[in-house]
Amino acid sequence: MFNKTADNTERPNSLAHTLISKATEIVGDIHFTGELIIEGHVKGNIYAEDDSKALIRVAEKGAVEGEICVPSAIVNGLVQGDVRCAVHIELAAKAVVVGNVYYNLIEMVMGSEVNGNLMHIGTSLSETKRLAAEKKQLPFDQTSLQKD
Image 1 (cartoon, rainbow, N blue to C red):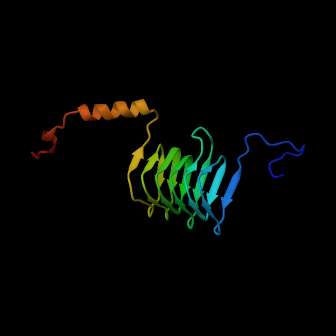
Image 2: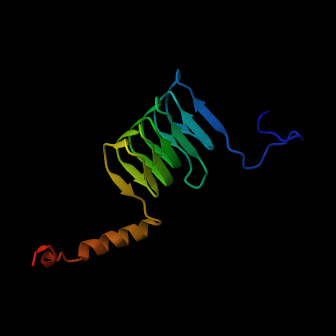
Image 3: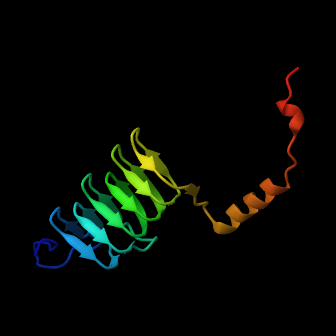
């Protein structure tokens, strides 16, 4: 009805929007495409394919108890669990994440809070492993710490 053109056919590549309202609590995992807006409470994991254009928004009063694995996220509420964003994550002023944040590109506004680790996801896992191995092999030069 809302996603149709004048000749009553579906629009290609149109994003679906899903709202979990303030008075709603979902118990269970969610798999979605398009945009998911959480103003209520979700107890479960939330997933979207990394190669999709999916976006999750956790509103100021919204809360998620579980893991979030999506390409892009905007968080301004509470997330109790790890957050993995293959493309982009924005942590707004009232965001609280109790868990690790795995990101490719991150924006943090003053006031946002992460109670866990921030872990950058490299462009490829093999590149990340190679860089980590090289870092371990580099000798630590203590002379650079001495004052003249």
